[in-house]
Image 1 (tube, helix red, strand yellow):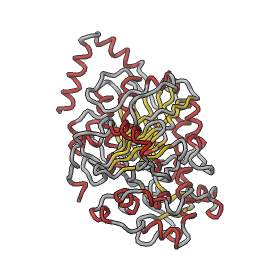
Image 2: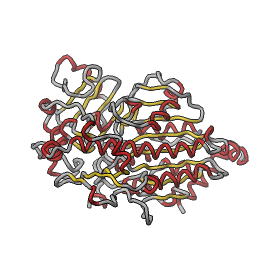
Image 3: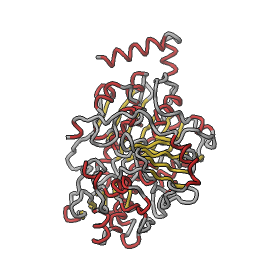
Image 4: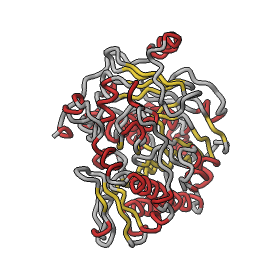
Length: 482
C-alpha cells in the first residue's frame, strides 16, 4: 500500500507542472528499456579483446550499434553487492553490502530502486532470470516477474542431466560438463523466451524489461555444441607469471588464496596458495576449466542473440534503449586465483554497452565508468524525475561524445576498508592499514608489477587516495549470512 501511495504522490507532483493528459502523452513517447545482465562475465568478449579465442558475435554486434565502455567497473566484486549497487544506485560503502553474506533486503524495501522508479513513473516493468542475488525481487516493484522456477523438461541453471559428463574439481564447487539437450530447453533460454514474448507484445505504456542471463556463472554446464567450439587441448590459457604475488601485500595474498569469495573469516589468515588453482594445475585440468568457461560465455552470447532478434522484429526497435553489462568479472588462474571477489582488473572490469534510441553507434569510451552510473543514465535518457543522493553519474555526455572526459574514477569495494580506485591509466588498491598496490595500465595491463613502494609514484598515489570512500558503513548482517 505504501508503494502505491508514493506512486500517486509522485504523479500528482509531476502533474503540477503539466496536465495529466500531457504527462500521459509524453510517457507514451518515452523510450523503452531492455536491461540485460550477465553473471560472472569478465572481459573475454571480442569487443574487449579479453581473449583471442572468445566467440561473442552478438555482444560484439551490439557494441557496434551503440557505445562500448571499455573501462567500466563494478562497484562490488560479488553478485550480491554488485547487483544491490546497480539497482539502488548506491555504493557498497553507502549501503553496507560488500559480500554475498551481507543482507540487502531492507535496502530494497527502503530505497528507491531502479525498477520501482520506472514503475512509479508510468512504465510497465517486468523481469526474468537473475536480476538480484538469490533471485530476490520485491513483488510490488514489478508488474510481472519470472525468477527462480522449475519447468518439467527444462535443464535448471545448476543442472546437467547427463551426470556421467560432469567433471568436478576436488573439494570444490567448481564443476563443468556438456549435455546433449538443445539450448532452447535450458534455464537461460526460457528466461530469454519469456522476455522476448514481452518484447513483441502490444504495450500501452513504455516498458522496462530486465533479463538476467545466468551464465557464465558456475557450474559450467552447457549444451555440447558450445564445448565443441573450444577443444580443450587448443584453448589458450591466461598469461600468468609464477611469482606474480611476490610483490602483493599480505591482505592481497589472503584474497587471492580464498576459495570462498573471501566470505569466510579464515580467509583473512590464509597464507597458503590457492588450493583450487593448485588442483587445476596438478590434475591437468586448467585447459578444461578455461574451455568450460569459454563455452559458457559463448552459450550466454547465443541467448543474447535470441533476445536481440526479438527486439529487432518488434515494433519497438527504434524506440528502445539496450543496456548490457555483467555484474563483475572472474579469474581463471590469474594471480593464482579462480572465482571473483578480488580488487584486480580480472574482476572489476566488465562489459558495458548502451545502444538504441538516440544513441549513435560505433563509439568506444575509454574513460573510467562505474556500473553505478547506469541508474542516473537511464533517468537521464528516459526523462524521469531525478532521484536524490545517487552515487553514480549520468553517462549521457559520453553517449553524445565517447571522447568526453570524466573526472571521477571507478571505485570498487570488498569491505569497508578494501577499495580499488581505477582511472584512465592507474589502478590503486588500499587495504586501509598501509598495505597497498599500484599498477600502471599503459605499461603493465596484466597488473604484474606493483609500483606502490616506488617513491616516484607518490603523487599518483596521493591523487588517487583522495577518492577513497570515507565513513564507510559497516557490513549489514542478516539472513544471507546464515
